[in-house]
Length: 286
Image (cartoon, rainbow, N blue to C red; front, side, top):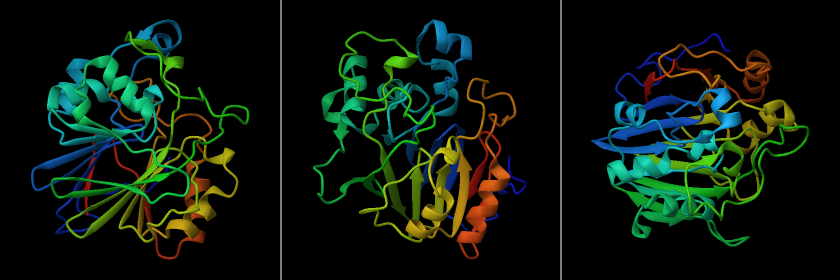
C-alpha cells in the first residue's frame, strides 16, 4: 500500500489520545478511559457470505475488539461501515450518532431510541454537534465516491429493515458524513469515503485526518481537493484493506488501490504533511 507505517508514538511521543485502526474505515479513539468508535466493522464477512446470504454480526469478534464504547458513529450505512453498530450499542450502552438510515437499523435491532441520535441537518444549516465525555463531535454533510461504473454502490436510504439480519445490498448508503472529533486539545477528522463536500467543511488543519482510500480514483482531483479543503498535519490511510478477510490475518490491499500514487499527489499538494498506515488493530498516539 504505502511504505511508511506509523509506529505507536511516531506522531506524538507524549500523546494522550490513542487511535486504533479496526480495519476498513473503522477506528477506536480513546482518551481518559472514554472510547468513541467510528464505522467499526469487525465481522468481516467472506465475499461468498456477502453475495449469497444475510449478514449477522460476529459477536465474538465484537466482544474481543470492541468491548467498550461511549459513542459509536456511522459515517454512512453500507454494511462494511454499519453492520456491527447496533450490536455494539446493545452490548456497551453506547450512544449511536448517524443518519436516519442508521437510526432505522438500530430500531430494528432493539437499541433504545434515547441512545440513537440522528445527525442529519437541513440544507444550509449549522453543523450538528454532540458531546460524549471528553469528546466534542461535529458532523458535516459529505458524499460517497462514485466507484461503481460512475455510481454510488447501493444508493438510497434504509427504511424497511424491520427484520434483521439483512442481505448486503439492503445496507443502503444513506446520508454520508465527515466527522470532526475534538479531545485533549487534539482534532481528528474522519472521511469514510473517498469523496468530500467542500462547502461548509469548516475543520481545517486537523492534527490527524483518517482518510478512506477505496475508490479515490473515481473522485476528480481528490488528493488536491483534500489538501485544499483540510490541510491536515498528518494523514492515516484507511479502507484500503481487503475486508472480506478476517482480522486475524495481515492486511492485504484491495486491487487497484494505487496507494503510492495517492500518497505522492497528496504529499505534493500538502506541505510537510505526514502520511502513513497502520497494521490491522495497530495504534498511534497523538
